Length: 259
Image (tube, rainbow, N blue to C red; front, side, top):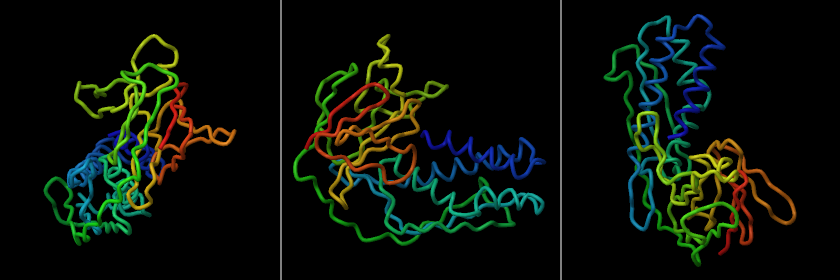
């Protein structure tokens, strides 16, 4: 998940900025626990049919073991300060294809006793399942600039990843993402402006809207609407609701959204 790379970078910067004496080993331990928490929570996402995925819990208790009393300030900063861990969990759920439940609560408890793997997540309160609100009619994305395997794509109710190459691999050649709409990795200068994990579109059953998200792409994502170019903020959040006729720019590649 691209969130893990961002979390590692931001968390490392925060630790080093506020605690100049923190060792590299301490920082690695914190990052490994943070990564493991996000991975575990994302694995609890469940498929419920018709391409929908949900996270069936509305409250989490995250227990983190503090190795030594003198390290408590570091662990407080990394896990218990503000709402950062909760925000990262919500983003990890979205990257796993599930919208976080409304009012999802994340409680962090720093323990002074050992825990297996350094942490434990307790899951509470499965909310009652809500019926999906299907789109009135299928939406389409028509490729206007850039090379893809087809010109028109039909969007369903599941998450649709957009980027360069169909399969995105990490440094160890492991699959980390699959793009349903994949631009060719060619010598075309347009292709070089599309990141491998560039953006995604997700149908929001609650509002009945398709929403566009930028996944920290290098050249950005924007909409051309009503004569103005609107940038799509990178990362977490609710994304931007799409309207029929919107032209979407993935770097220099371009597509039109229609319903």
